[in-house]
Image (cartoon, rainbow, N blue to C red; front, side):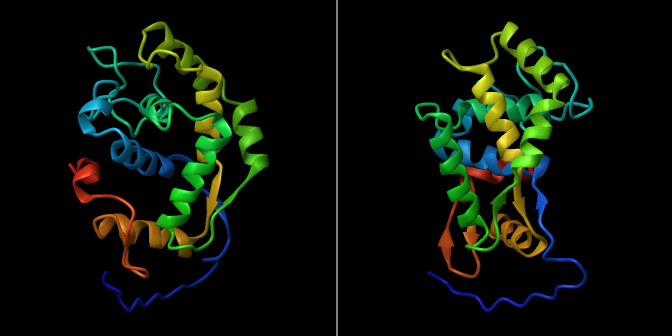
Length: 194
């Protein structure tokens, strides 16, 4: 293990919490690739640019979401992650993994944002039903649980300090600089940078 001396310069409201929202997408994508592998993940979701808006109700010609970074693809990757666990255990697994990515720094859950997301997510629900109609999900997927999981992951909070550690961890091949511990194998998430 390598330990690095880390220097950080923070200015302004760097310790004010904010929700991950769509920045959770590449993290979940990396987790599901680590669990399953690229080939399995890409049987369900593409990896090409879509040229469409992030929340478009659209699939590629193979009836798959275009990529994991748009809402359709992010919902699909949520459905793949730890399929054999119940919703509470899946959320617990992801928060523990995200906490590892932050090097143990600030990570929380904003229940008010989660409830608001779920209450106002008509388009996301429509997208989920559209994908279910087109048989995008793995067999046995519970759509409502998958959407709740997606909303939960968007409602995880970090601050600028902890988010900077996550970014540095990804940039360092999945290794947390402060601790010298590995969260991801580089080969499993290299596709994030293609």
